[in-house]
Length: 111
Image 1: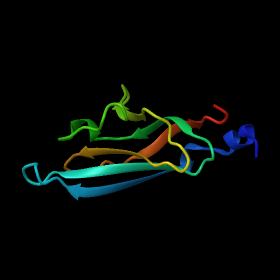
Image 2 (image 1 turned 90 degrees about the vertical axis):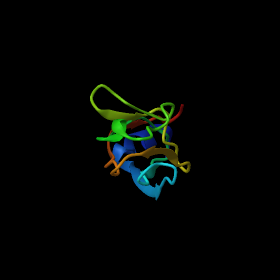
Image 3 (image 1 turned 60 degrees about the vertical axis):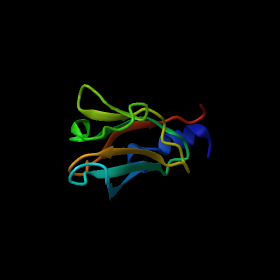
């Protein structure tokens, strides 16, 4: 499969999301810390990935801004590509887990 064929076959739905929780002992009341992990089944890196992230910006510990930022529309933008075989992760701490859902992104084959 060439790069153009791979790119045509890749969709934002090829990105899977898993959120893992553990309690931060240093925070009063044991604020939960979460690790969001993004993976792609696409053979090409997925770039400009936007996900829903309601509640992320009001957390006790915001995510690393070099990894994710909240845009003007309230969506989160992953600051680096989601690369096949290499999980993309960031941590955050909020009272309840964020329900991430991929809204958009594109395959960057041949870069």
